[in-house]
Length: 238
Image (cartoon, rainbow, N blue to C red):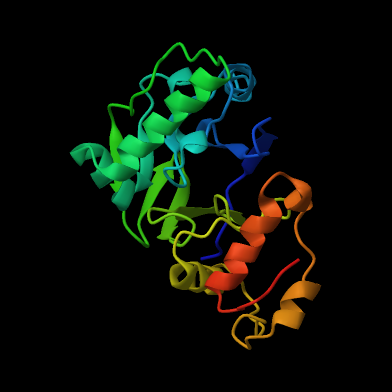
C-alpha cells in the first residue's frame, strides 16, 4: 500500500528573548504547540495561530530550560508531552523541574514581566521515552532523546519536519551541558558526518569555523572559548 503523507501546516515564531522558536503544527483539524514562549504578548499571538475550528490537542517541551516551559499557561488544560526524564523530575519535584521555574520567576521579576498564570507545571504531563510517539489527530509524532544541551532534551519528527530544540542554530553559540552527549546527539541529528576539528585537536581549524550571528553578544566569545577548551583545544583564544 502506498504511504500517503498527512497534510501538515507549520507556523514558527521567534521570541524577543534569544530568538527562541515556538512552533504550531496543525493537521486535519488537530494542532500541537511546541515550546510556547516567551513573553505574554508573544504568547497571545501564538494562541491566535491555532485555527478557530481546530482542536489544540497537546503541548510539547523540547527540554526544561526556563524560557521554553513557562508559556503553557496561555493554553490552560492542554496535556503536555515531554521526555520521560523531565516528566519524572516534574512528578518528583526534582532539580530540572524546580530550577526551570525558579529561573523563570527570577527573570520575570527582574524585567517586570507579568505572567498571569504564575509558575507551575501543567497538571497533565505525559513523558515519552526514546523512540516513543504520540498522535495529534491522524498525525504521528515521533520522539527521540538528544541530551547534551540539557540532560532531558528530546527532538520530535512530524512527517518531514524535525524540531530539535536548541540544536543546530545558525544564531546561537552552543550551550553544552555534557560534551560527550552533545557530540553523540549531533551525530544522530546530522545525516552527513565529517571529521571535526575537535577530534583532530586542531586549534587552527577551530579558529576558521565561522561563529554564529550571536558572536558579538555579551559573553558569547568567552563562552565559545570555554566550549573549545571542553573539546580539548587547550590554549585557544579569539
